[in-house]
Image 1 (cartoon, helix red, strand yellow):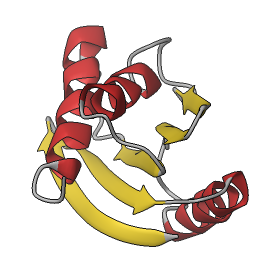
Image 2 (tube, rainbow, N blue to C red):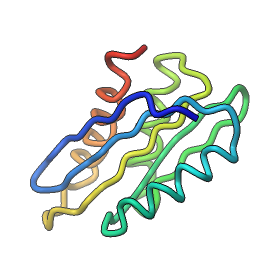
Image 3 (cartoon, one colour):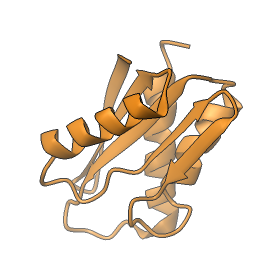
Image 4 (tube, one colour):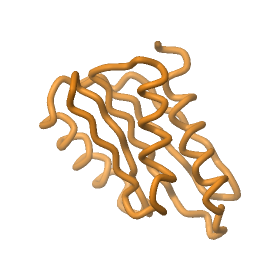
Length: 118
């Protein structure tokens, strides 16, 4: 596994920290998730998406359905990425963003984290 890039976005005091990893196995993803959960103990959510050949998965991690994992996954597919894991750590800033802004925040975090390394 290799950390390729990170990107931080702040919206209404909520902080979104995107991580872009090159991965080869599901086990590497499990290790990264353990690390991120340890590193960001106070984070409210860590949604993610990955694609390793024909193996794909996305998770909203308790965010409203399809507001987090799906937009991250869509960035992976639109950019034809493979062997990739993108997670976005969210620290809640005290203001509810609503589904539209929340979805755009995850989408833009994923878009920006891959921007200069494709």
